[in-house]
Image (tube, rainbow, N blue to C red; front, side, top):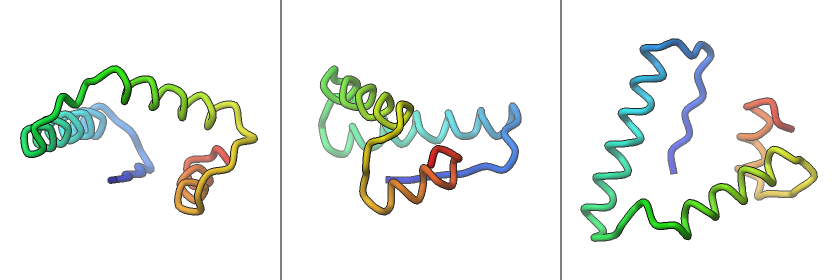
Length: 73
């Protein structure tokens, strides 16, 4: 897992982040021989994002730290 926190998010930084994640997803899929866009993973991501957005859910210490750094805790 990779986490990147940016102080300033401008067009150049956002473009670089999108390109990074697209390339990372594709490269990992090729190496593992899987479909990275399967529906189960998409639904799990949506469920976790809802839990984070609603608050009140407990996550592991690492995730709690990242949520606090991003202003969600």
